[in-house]
Image 1 (cartoon, rainbow, N blue to C red):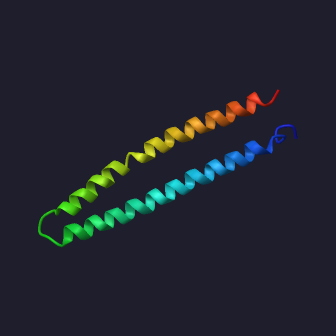
Image 2: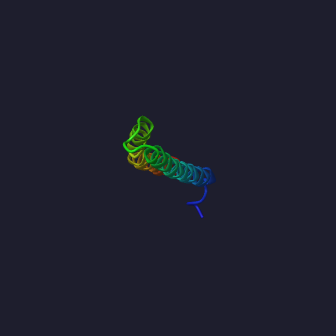
Image 3: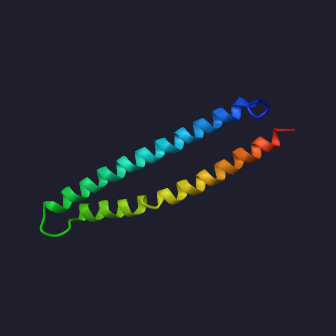
Length: 89
């Protein structure tokens, strides 16, 4: 079992995956809450309110986060793979 010699890398990968999943869950819940807040702000008045517009702007800006999460995942996995081959010797 020479491949599992370095358990730090396996533990690091598990920690990384757990962190990404946690960020994704928090982001999803946050977007759901913001969408509900926007619906409540817009229902109170015949037209869109300032609060509803501001909440919509926040939702629009937060929807760009998954793109960055994907880039972070690719870079981190590249570092993990390179680290595995670097310490293999």
